[in-house]
Structures are given as structure tokens and as C-alpha cells.
Image (tube, rainbow, N blue to C red; front, side, top):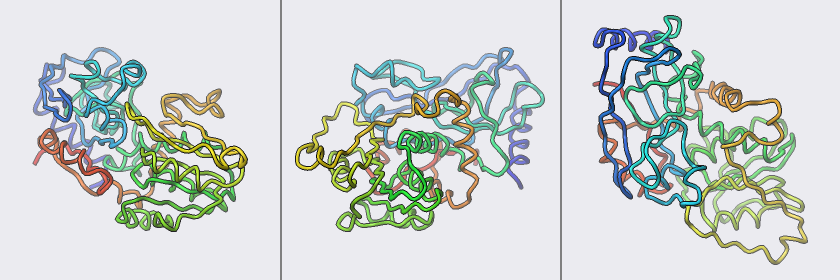
Amino acid sequence: MNEQQRALDVATNASRRRSAGQIIVARALWYVKAGSAELRPERLEAPRPGELRIAAEYSALSRGTERLVALGDVPQSEWARMRAPHQAGQFPFPVKYGYSATGVVTLGPQNLVGRRVFTLHPHQDHFQLPEAATVILPEDVPSRRATLAANMETALNAHWDSGIQPGDRVLVIGAGIVGLLTAYLARRIAGTSVAITDIEPSRREEAAALGIAFVPVGQIPQDNGIVFHTSASAAGLQTAIDSAGFEGTIVEMSWYGTKTVNVELGGAFHSRRLKLISSQVGHVAPSRRATIAHRDRLAMAIALLNDEALDCLVSREISFDALPDELPRIWSQGGATLPPVISYRQP
């Protein structure tokens, strides 16, 4: 059964359970205190004109920003800037947070009912959004793989920030999902030499599946023109600085929340004329901002997911019902395993 037929079945089953426009009670994940979450009911009225009702299929967890939210580590100075689209509640708690979901339209314009969509919505089994807040998924991008869209968008924006060119020598430090996607994009640029490293040797398997050279920490290549840092650790950032070549660019993609980060900017940092820049997905990179809107960038990121090799990044899943109990274990694992995808499929 192809993706579109399965989506039509989801929409048909949903319409059989609920008459069009009927008020329903959905369930959403809320972070209620540091390290603790629960599922709360949420009443959905009939969709208004221009809105879609969506039955979730999958959503993705982030061990970066979302983990900091879950643990209460968002600094007060960033509470306004770090609000996710369609977030409910206020930092620090309670807050409904998340930004990578796929689902099937069950109510809305007839030409959209049964279509699969991606949206930046928190973890919730049924929800409603303006049509403009969704992106239709192409047939060649399955719904589970499409949960990588937000991370792919981050990787794409970092490439635009970096100024990467064909033939560049590239190193990625941190082989989580964002790091792996960043290296995956770099490898597709003609003539680039790309390596990725991580303190977790098990990350070698995913790197190999994506055709990326994995190097142990003790064998990191030097004199790299572009270094992307994604490990969210001071040691990783220092390694990024140390492994950049003359007039190299270090792209800092990690966000540390309330944590202070100490690195050495003495020694040869200035004589090597290194450039340390931040990359954050909240704004389109300056080099593209005049011509590419947020929605355009997201559509590009989704189109870049049309590769079955990327399924290795979403191979594990847990049920939405089990999520509150599983989250403490997921957050405590660090980089030992990639985070699972949340499934909303009924048994």
C-alpha cells in the first residue's frame, strides 16, 4: 500500500468515527515540570474556514532544544524568542512544545482531505491549523521519514550560513540527527571531502549507511575549511576550533540553554584568522533571506528527504501513549542512541 492510499484510509476511518464538524477531545503532551510530562485532553471545536483538522501519524523528538525545554533549561532571556510555532503554555512550565509532526487531513477543503502534511506542531494526536501552516508531503517522502524535515531545515540553513563551496574540506562534530543530516548534505556537493566524528563509536553505523566517513575522536583530520559543530558541548566546540584550517569557518549549530561554555581563543586562534559564526533556524540565512521565505525553505528541506537511505535515522519508534513514561529514559541516554519517532497509529 502506497503512502497516499494509506493516508486516504486514515481519513476515511476518522470520518467514520466522527461526523464532519463534530467537537472532539484530542490529547496533547505537556511538559509540566523539569523532567516530567503528561498527556492532557484538548477540546477541538469544528474547524473554522481556512483551517484543517489533522490526525497525527508521527512526530519527532529533539535531543537539542526540546530536551532543554523538558528539563527547564531555557534561560528567561530567551523565553519569547524560543517559542515554537503553535506552542501553548509559557516557559518554563507547563508548556506544550514540539515542532516536527506529520499527519493526514481529516476535515477541511475536499481537495485536501486524505492528503499527508508536515507541520511544526507539538506532540498531539489530533489538532487544527490554518492551511498555510502545513506543507503537503510528496509521494516519495514517507510520513515517518518526513519527521526529519525540521532537522533537515536546520542543516540546510547552516550550509547557507557557512558559505560552503564545491571542493571544500568539511568536518562535522557531533553525529546526532542534525550532524548526520549536515554531513549528508555536504557529501552531495561536488568535490567535497566530508568526515564526521562523535564520542559515541556506535554513530559509525548511521554514518556508513549515509555514505559518510566516520573518524574516531583521536583521528580527526586537521586543516578543514568548514567545521560544523553540533555536539552541544564545550569539548566539541574546542575540537571544532582546533581542527579548522587557516582562515577556516566554524559554524556553531548547538544551543546550550543556561549552560556556560568555555573555550580557548588564545594561542593561534587569531593568527589563523578563524571565523566562528552562529547558525540558528529561526531566521533564513542572510545569503538567501531576500528571495527565500521560511515556507520555501521548509519545502526544500522536505524535498531533500526523498532518499531511502535516510530511513536509518528514524528506524525506532515508540507509541504516543507510552511517551510520558519513556521520556526520562530518552533524555538520559545522551547520544548513545538516536531518539525514537513517536507513532500515533492505533494497534
